[in-house]
Image (tube, rainbow, N blue to C red):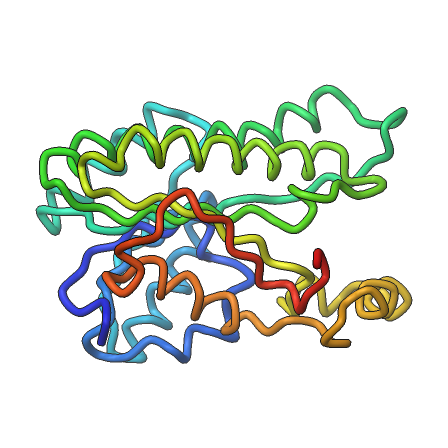
Length: 245
């Protein structure tokens, strides 16, 4: 109930979230699901509503600032306020250094880094006016360590750490909290389809000796989006089973 009456925008919520949708309960924040694919966005909206939550699905390319500005305007038109922004949109095009294509580099950074910037910039005026806001940016352990064949992804996730800290410094005087979460390897449907060899390689380097569960990341995001984390800003919180320790 920590998010009762709050209005949230969550990007990239249409995929990979099945296992923590069950945590939605009456009294949770109303959620605007911002997903490029309208079909998966609507599917998530129906699931949220079936569980007693309030949701609004919007098909948006977060890399397009005009679409993002329009999305924020629409959410404000429906709910009148935005308390929380969770920048979760992202995807990967794995390639080693010598094989990275320019279009793949641009596409990955456009969604992860530029998309996050677009969303923050679009909600900033409203949150500043209200002197209230919780922004959570989804980075990755690869944003700290880098990874072989993850040049674009790791670079984008590292950029999010600098963006988080810079925005946190600028917006702190308006009582807006901006933090980043760094998940390790989380057992989403996408990861479940990966080879057992790849999963075991990651698990061997994780002190807790297992993959993370989606709800374990969701719990941390919910905390950072709540007033319980009111004295945290510019923080980088790892949810990785100790992988980066």
